[in-house]
Each structure stands twice: as C-alpha cells, then as structure tokens.
Length: 143
Picture (cartoon, rainbow, N blue to C red):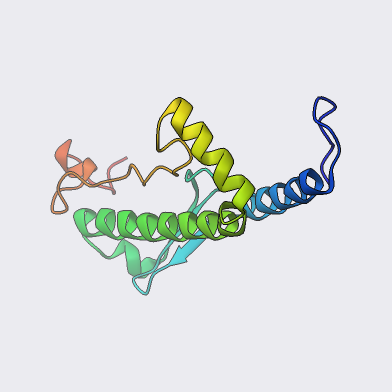
C-alpha cells in the first residue's frame, strides 16, 4: 500500500484508489519493450521510449545503409507501439474507475483536455530511401 497523504482524510474509498494507483504505477514501470525482426535487428526501449539496446546480426549488416536504417527505425517504432500498448493496458483499470473519471474531467475542465494522453512516438524517418549517414555523404562502414 502507498503511503497516505496526511492532508487527506482516511477512508475506504481513498484507500481503494491508492491501491489502484499503486498497481497502475507498478505495471507502467515495467513498460519497456523489445522487438527482434527476422532481418536480424533487435531493438530495446525503456519505459520512457528511449533506446536502451540495439543488436545487429551479420544478416542485418549485409543490408545497404538505407535499408539498415529503415529496419532499425521500423523495429524501434514497433517496440514503441508495444510500450504504449503496455502503458495503456496498465492504466485501463484505473481510468475506468468512476472516481478517477470524475477527477480527470475536473482536471481537464480546469487545465484543458489531453493532459493525460501519452505522446506518440517522435521518431519519424524523413525519407525512407536515404539514411541519415548517407545524407551526410558517409557509410556505416566509415571510421
């Protein structure tokens, strides 16, 4: 059970909500994701959507720089979708609680809608046929 806020009165309803919030936080804390592709690219992202690991097999390295970049971006985007799905699932039970819905409506009325919506992935390729390295005149094999 989470530590009660001394400014709030104790009540069974408040204790129930605290338990739900603690369960949602615990589930959301485990929202990292890993994706491995058949092309030999493995991407791991943390709960914040930051890249936590990248593994490339010799098969993946046989791709052109542009193709390899596309494979990495695709794997990252799939992992990020999985992470967001995990976060949404962790919050579903909490968001369906009538007391939480009332609090959300009050917050949105006061601060504006959309505060609690998770951001979408910000990784978007500008041109799938030209990698970042190639746009700068290099290759993944340059040292």
